[in-house]
Every structure is written in C-alpha cells, then in structure tokens.
Image (cartoon, rainbow, N blue to C red; front, side):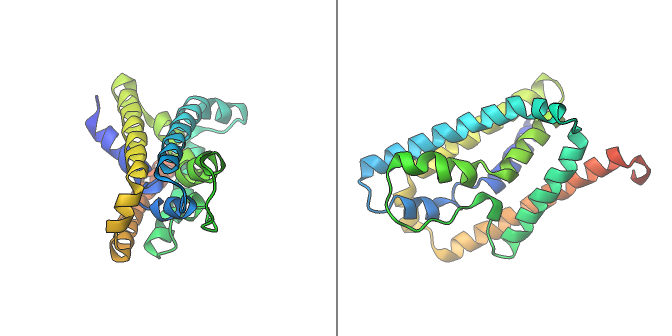
Length: 208
C-alpha cells in the first residue's frame, strides 16, 4: 500500500471535512437531546457520510465522462474550490462550503443526521471534488487501496469524534479551535495549489 498517497488523501479530506471543526454545530443541533439520541445521531451521520463517500467515489468519474469533462479540468476546478475553502479557513471564515449554520434548536436525529450533518457539512462540495480528483489520480492497486483505507479511517474518526462530542466540547477552548482551523486551512491551501499546478501542466503543457 502506498503510505505517502494515503497520508496525502487523508490530510486533504481531513482538512475539509474536519470533524473537530464541525463539533460546535453538531453540539448546537443536538442540544437538549438525551444522550441516547445524541449517540443515534452520531452513528446515523457517520453511516450517511460513509455511504456518500462510496457513492461519490464510485460514480464520480462516470458522471464526469457523461458530461464530457476530463479529470484534469475537474482537478483544476476542484483545486480552485479547495483553495477558496483553505483561504477562508486561514482568514477565520471557516470552511464555508462545508458548513450549514443551524439555529441551535433541538431536533430529532432523523432531521439532522443526513442534512445538514452528513451533507453538506461533512460531505460537501470540497469533499466531493477531492474524492473524485484523488481517485482519478490513483495509479495501480496500491494507491487505490490507500485511497479506500484513508476514507475508512476518516469516516471512522468522524464517528468516534461525534460520539464523544459532548465530552470533547467541554475541553475544546475557542483558542484551540481557532488554531486548528488556521492549521487545516494552510494544509488545504498547499494541497489545492498542487492540484491546480498539476491540472494546468496537463491542460497547458507549455507551462510545464
């Protein structure tokens, strides 16, 4: 298995779908619910997020082919989208395309587990773009395996974080959340620049 590719894929997706960054919204939307309902919501959200990852990864390239879009053009467009997300995080605006700001009112697990938690907060435009691009970049069985392992680790980590959300929320200061957001933004911006450069070199070989 290609460990370097695994780390790259996981880092990009973690920066966008960062479960820690989504904790405040999850805690707000589940406020007032009994612990059993919070756990059900966390598990349902994890299931839907994993299901969407598989669906997008398996069907993404076919959808692009149907519309006649090349992977390099999508890599360039996806890099621009991801770069905007990273810059927003660096400026303290958060991963805007991934977030849906709730009212904080308590709702049932069926109301929030798919929307807005799984989509678009965890699996949003940035995540979808990155899924399609990285799977398209995967060469050989080792990198394909690394891609799916990275996705499995990310979904599992998301589930664990959401299950522990009440406890984690009590120990995460606002300063720590800001530092984490800035760091993830810088990592995301660097990955996006590389994606844009790779797409440009293929589409415009004279720039290589």
